[in-house]
Length: 275
Image (cartoon, rainbow, N blue to C red):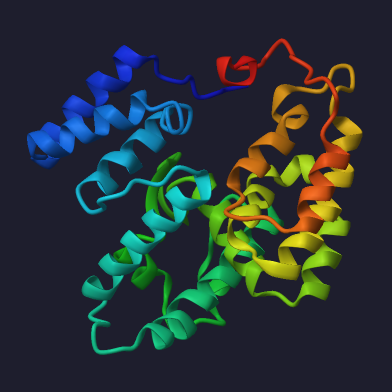
């Protein structure tokens, strides 16, 4: 089993220094990134190599860096979309046309791929889109990888990172009717789809968000504090709550009823849990 180790503060500073040199950042931009990783509100968000890379890329474009997982992936998705408009020469299209013709079909492709569990995409997966895999690769949404199998060279199409696939799947779930989205959530184990659920906490609004919070918190409550349950499941509730941009009286009541009186610490908890 493999896991991604988090950087300590010294490693994060060194990573930013190297990335800043590569991107030719100004001293002001580099200084702001160093402030972000030391800020208690965002320090735990920017600890992994991927998230630090995203932060550095956004640091050259954005005045205000995201403070949640959802905010970070919304920002990098917008960044990729702007690149796609130039690379695919779509500047003449409206935002609505780009959303309907390029993005929404891709959200469905991503969700279908996510639930299928397949190792890589195929040409057939893009049958419902006006754009072929090469266009999405050129835009930066997916990537091609060349693999050698014996004497043969095989080219596969996949996502650069699973978390981005999970974000795109959440975007498709947002598009679903509330009935279909509820039906999907009631037929899954929340623990197996934590990042998708986490992104939905940050994307959905109004009654759609209230309905999802009610469904997911019932299951999360059942595993909190259970013996032998890993940190990622035990503390999933706290991670999801952190993604909420705003709440309603119904969501507040649901959180109060779900949160335990004591917060269990498991052997694989990070320092963030203990804080």
